[in-house]
Structure formats: structure tokens, C-alpha cells
Image 1 (cartoon, rainbow, N blue to C red):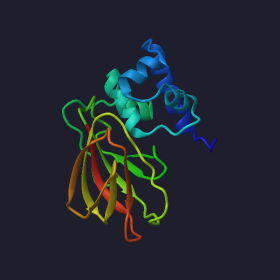
Image 2 (image 1 turned 180 degrees about the vertical axis):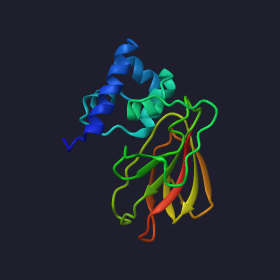
Image 3 (image 1 turned 45 degrees about the vertical axis):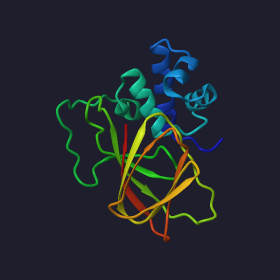
Image 4 (image 1 turned 90 degrees about the horizontal axis):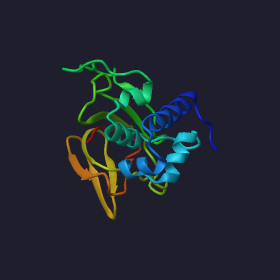
Length: 187
């Protein structure tokens, strides 16, 4: 098992506590989120990194605020949420990418917008695939990025956009030895 941070342990405890408080079995939660029971046990034990997509699926399935799952405190804004440049909540839920949550203070948002930074990776390095319920919208801000959607590959450049079903296994890598930055909206 890799080093587990105190944030990872706190999130693992919160999602397990939430499941138990709602009297959901791991099978119930697997049904609601589309995640395997084995993955749920791994996430809840803290032995595996919990991806933001799973936290979003739990939040959507249970009506609990995503911010509460990540930080342990409930968002309080109900009409609007202003996040100034570089002031998004830093969320490091996937080691390969850096996330900045942009609606983290809004109560129960219908979507989750993030600024995502993908570091450059060598072309032969294996890619980290993700797959979850819902849909995603990507709008490139900086750099170039290869996106693999199932068996298809697309290259995105600044101001390109991509909308896809998140149920398709997908992976991303920055190109040209430079980081790629994009707006990612998960619905």
C-alpha cells in the first residue's frame, strides 16, 4: 500500500460513515454509483486513492455536498459562488492530475466545474484510465492534450472543447513536454 495522507484517511472515513448513516450496504452504494463493491471497500479502507469522480457520484446519489465529502464542512452559499483566479479549492484526488474545484462553496451544485492541470508525460508511459457515471465537458485553456476515449484518440488545443459520456474509459496526457490546463465540468 502506498503512503496514505491524513486527507485521504479523513475522506475514506467520511464516505464510510455516510454510507453507514444512510444504512446503505456496499452493494447498495455500488448500484447507485456504478462502482464495484471491491473498489468501495478499497476506498473506504483508505488503501486506494478516492477519485473525484467517485466522490461526485456519492454526492449525487446521496444528496450530500461534494465539498462536505472532501473537506468535512458543508458549503453555505445558495445563490451564487464567486471564486477568484487561483482561489479554487485544491483537490489532489488523482495523482496524475491537479484539480481546482470552482463551485466548492455552493450548496448542492448540479454540476462540478474544475480547472485541471495535467503534467507532461512521455508518449510511451502508460495512461491512467478513468470511467464513471455521468458526462463531462472539457474546454482547453493552455497547452495541448491527447485524450483517449475508448478506442478513439483526439488531440485538443487551446479553445477546443470536448463533450463525452464519462462511462467511456478515458485518459489524458499533456503533449509537447508542457502541462495542459483545461476547464472540466462533470455532470
